[in-house]
Length: 199
Image (cartoon, rainbow, N blue to C red):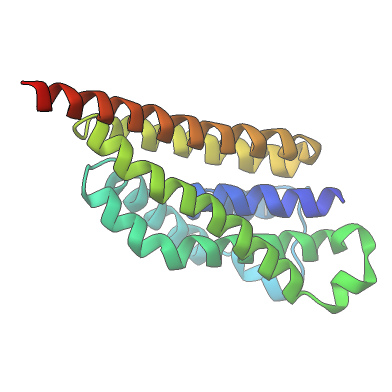
């Protein structure tokens, strides 16, 4: 169960930022014995994969904080974030043997699908909430929202690896935050539109 929670937590983190959980897994696997990736996923901890991941992370962090460009970036990331979610779920569940489950070992594609779905759902929530935040704050909310999302991705990645039992709580809080932000900005826009109509 803990390995599944680790995979789900990392996949959800990938829905916010594709490269943070990838680099967390890569760096922990490279420099510690906490995660030992199987041979088929050992390329994740290679220097070239870490280097490419770091460059992509830097690009993502910058682009995601610019209003309007962040929406284009989210559209591009629609394919990348779920794929990365599937990858990190599969890699970490393979590393843990999903609590020594022979069924999961014989059906590794299940982990990939769970990771893709988890990451895709979080990415979908982010993609819907961000334009509302941008419009509701005249673009000033983009860097704030992006920074919160990056921080949540780092936090969720670390929790998923080191304290997987807390992943459930973190996912509930993340879902609540996305819904709360979207509703708050929607109410603000309605009030603004009413004031504009009366003016």
